[in-house]
Image 1 (cartoon, one colour):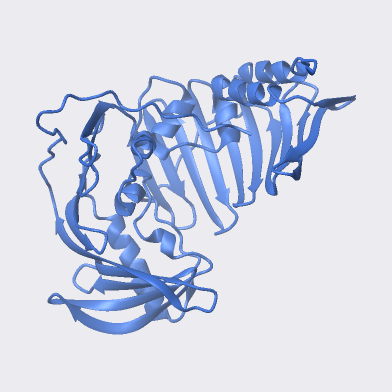
Image 2 (cartoon, rainbow, N blue to C red):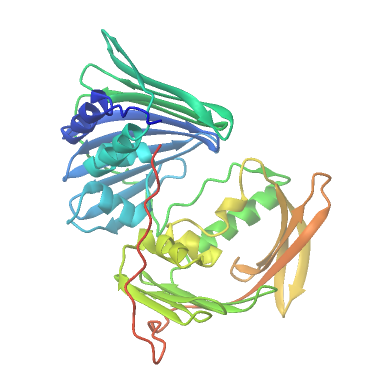
Amino acid sequence: MFLAYTPPPTIFSQGTAAFRNLKAATVDVDVATSLGRAKYHLEFVKQSRLVLRVKELANSTERIFAINGSTLTGYDPFVNERLNRRVSTSGTLLERLNGVLGTQDDPIQMLLSPAAANVFFKNMGKVQGWKIQNGKDGVIATRRGLYDKKQSTTELAFNAQHLLTRFAANVGGLKTNWKFTYGPAGAATFSTPRSARLVESLLATPQTKWATAGARKLGTQLLHAYQNLNSATINVRSNEGNSELSFGGGKFREVARNIQWSYDGRVLSIYDPVHRRFYRGRAGRGRITDYLGETHHRADPFLRTLLARQTPYGDLLTADSKVKSAGTIVSDGASCDILQVVGTAKVSLLVRQSDHLLQSVTSDALDQRGRTISSTTRTFQIHRGAWTFKPIAPAGLSALPLPKVKPIKIG
């Protein structure tokens, strides 16, 4: 028995065309998923300039990013800090934004890239069983079915111009909701206040439960110390093995037991010593972790935060974390303050008094009763200052092209 094929609803191709023809606009996007919620305010003139305001509701932070020509500007109004980056003038606005900040949320990709919108609506059209309701304000497409024996619903709403205004999906209990509000095109320009301090990366604003003012001061000193660490080589010792991390001037290098990679700002080299495979090719900074993932490896957590232009260890100081100062200790000859962070795990940080960088970090995974299940310690030797970049180039191996990054399915 063969089921009759039903062509995709016309509204999906109309939606693709509407996004493709959206050359300039102001759009507010509310993104809510099972993992959290964010609000975006996007002004753009395609292939020319944009302003993107990002509000993370979980930690009450706001960031503003602007691209104008070859310059990307970032601004954190909470701490009045700004950054400037050079970006390529070739490629789409989305490619230029992703290359600096990493992959954007799907709704932002769709607004800035006709190709991303096309992929989204094509994926929707591959699924059968849509019901179309036409109204005076637009069109609503609805589908209900089963996913993993659980009820699944998907709904897309379009305005009279065929632009997507709402996407709501509940697939196997995982909920996704997008809301788009469109306005007339704005100037799509942004200037930071003159009083804003120029920094290398925007510092995460800690929305943390500090036990004392001393703990808050120590945590703030730690984050600012890493924010100002522009170039260094770090030797890491842990129960998972030793590694050497180097970074500075937009270049990165990691040498570990099971993975070695380097990036000179344009070319990424990856060597898997276990399987004796060597890859090399041009890559944007924001795609390095994707390429490493295709080789079934991950960059060291410290370098991952730098690649994303975030401050190392800023992710520990969340709204759910409780932070306290727990005295002092001498470790390998260095006088250190002890900072304890308790959230989903218990983390003990030994912060060197000399420069407020970490001497070591111990993470204890906890069960529901707060008892330690497992413990991991990483100890650091930090050599600040310039270092000589040496690309990863194993002898006797020819370089393969970088592995193809599999696209993430939208919707």
